[in-house]
Image 1 (tube, helix red, strand yellow):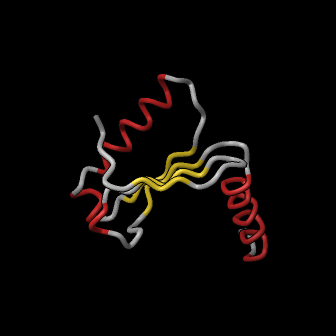
Image 2 (cartoon, rainbow, N blue to C red):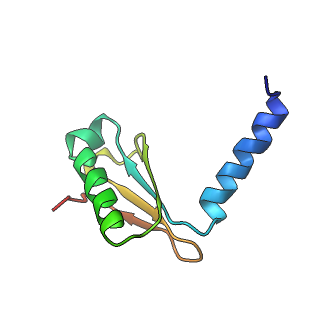
Image 3 (cartoon, rainbow, N blue to C red):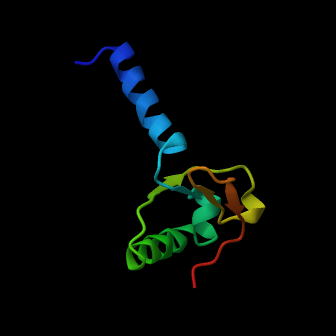
Length: 92
């Protein structure tokens, strides 16, 4: 069994690869408010578009961003670029 320190080092490495790595990281709010606003369909559409265009990206479901009135929310972090945040995102 790994020690806490070993787990912490691994978690820190994974976090750095997400926020400082070379692969875009897309997060979609899928708490109850996000799901009610269509976030599950948004995730499916994002993954389909990434596959169609052969774009590598991490796509993660996250909890509430705290802006329930603006759901579904999509947060995109691209290496070396400003962070993008979209609200009321619709899968078409």
